[in-house]
Image 1: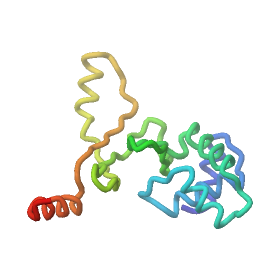
Image 2 (image 1 turned 45 degrees about the horizontal axis):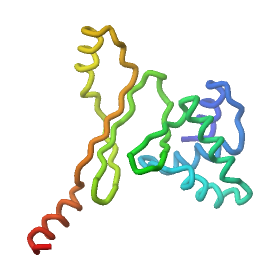
Image 3 (image 1 turned 90 degrees about the vertical axis):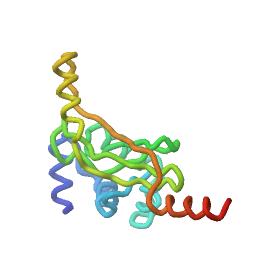
Image 4 (image 1 turned 135 degrees about the horizontal axis):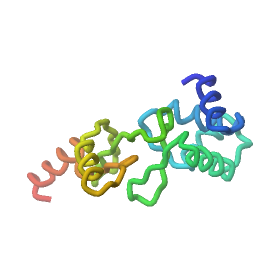
Length: 155
């Protein structure tokens, strides 16, 4: 994404355009599909701006999360991770994740297969679903091959 798109996004959210916010957004846009920790963002930011501090990254990330400019995700590994989001309406549905229980790789996928369930919940309970998150756990193709080989080798 271009810097002007980021600037417009920040302004629409009522935020000042700061070098730190622009840097975090640029880093995340350069890595689509990756789920970066604050420390990952910090390490990448230091390469472009050596004087930036980790506390600044944490504050910037939190502001951007609070205003739905970026999304915070958890894969139950003890780390908060972040991905670029917030480009659509506030009630948008996020993409979902498949997580390999062996190697930890995360695969993102799109799809709103839960629309029927959400409508049923609305109809029966009067509960309006505004968002959902799906995390599927299992084994990626590579790990399945390794596990099959280990099983054949009798390990």
